[in-house]
Amino acid sequence: MFLILLQYIRPVAAVEHYMEQHRAFLDKFYKSGQFILAGRRKPKSGGLIICKASSRREVEQIISEDPLDKYQLALYEIIEFEPTSYVNELQSYLS
Image (cartoon, rainbow, N blue to C red):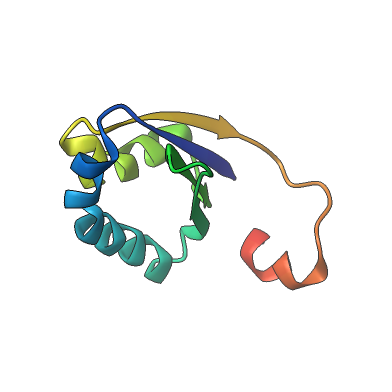
């Protein structure tokens, strides 16, 4: 599992211009089963995504499809982690 942290590096107005495309990007990977959760940071300075992927390289490939990456609007930090405890409802996402 991977936690992807996004930090906007351009004004929020510039980011908002591409938000519809960013949401389409998120939807694509929700449908594939690779994205489990995503949300905005508060205050609005970026976001986070929990991603199920087999490798960091796969995550990097996924990020390369994000308009916020393509147009250099955000920086990404990728943190790999191993879930060791969780609520039962998440079991299907983790196996």
